[in-house]
Image (cartoon, rainbow, N blue to C red; front, side, top):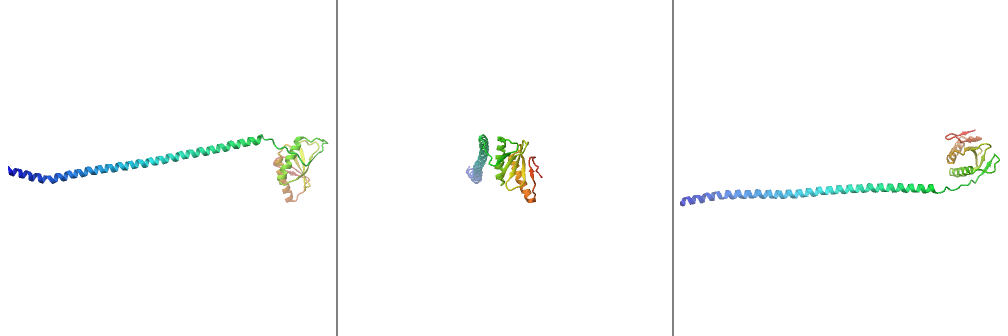
Length: 202
């Protein structure tokens, strides 16, 4: 009986360290798994936080972009509307009344020169001065209803113009012809500017 007890104790003592080692090993493995889960949880939280920051940054950039586009469109619309308003205001203003300062001679023996002719001559004077050309006098030729003959100071030729064409365009044509005739040393009797895009001299 004593032998059996001693043998059992020895066997239990012999099995004891293995069982403790197994228990500590199991405990270690469990602890390592818990630590790993905690680490993974922290990493997941950090990843989610990083993803959230990226999404927030992207959303902020999108909102800023949309706001900038709206501002640009708003500024463009304001500029356009203000431009239209200015144009309408300018159009609504009465045009300044110009009076001719040069002599207008009517060969048709009429003493009353029409307001249309006066307006044309006044605008022609103004347009010609801007181009460095000074008009001396204007003649309304006999039985020519829409023609005016323009004489320029310092020039021997005169320029036939039409009341139906723009005074500014004909002033430019006259200025170009004066330069051309001066360069070529040509002295014609007159230059006809009544046809658009063409000039005849004789």
